[in-house]
Length: 293
Image 1 (cartoon, rainbow, N blue to C red):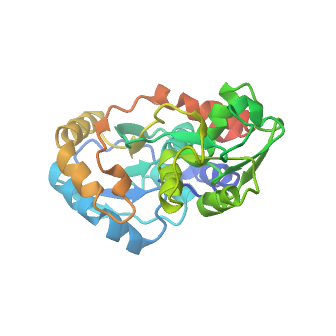
Image 2: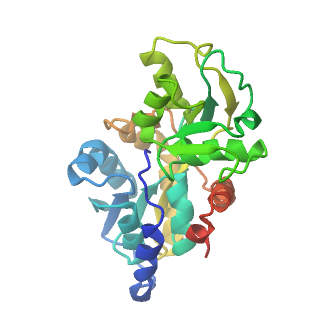
């Protein structure tokens, strides 16, 4: 998922809704489940890219599924908190914020093939490792993007660098970061392995032209989150149904124009501790309040 800038106002927006949250449990199986996606703000795009998944999900859960369009990440989180949404597909960075601000439950993880972050430099650069980025300029994507911001920042931290003071980080978006990198306006670029491959393909280049100096392990999975207002026995049943029918669900999910990234994905158990990497980076960049409970 591509992540838009959401730091700052998100915390205030979600917190302002907490006083009216309805935490009463729904004991019986609901007739309708409302489904939202955190980074899809247009209703038309939601239907275009997720209609086949909605239909498959409806068949697997034997329950009517309705789209719940949201205009921002903050609205998606607040809607879940206010019992306006039952199911929410979120990226790793959104999950840790939602988890800190609501009692929502991670139902299943949605893996993404080659979902990792890399840092690359131009051919001939004297920079051979992340630690040598001290005092240099690094282009990244969007604030809060797991692979375009948090993942590369984690690589800096592992190299012993302070991302707030040891180098200059420019948040330039997907296209802007790549363009500045290609034009030699920055010393290095950090982003997803998928975007890196896109760079090689569009430039008819090889890894020798843009050497990778650091790479993460696979990043935490995206998450299908379920409202804590649903009965716990029902939540367990839903989880089993999703995992046992994952081939059908993933095939449907990967057919959207912007969801091809899920081709080859799997539905797996979502362990909260898998997302500590994201929490560590938020704290390191001075945004610990965003994920504090």
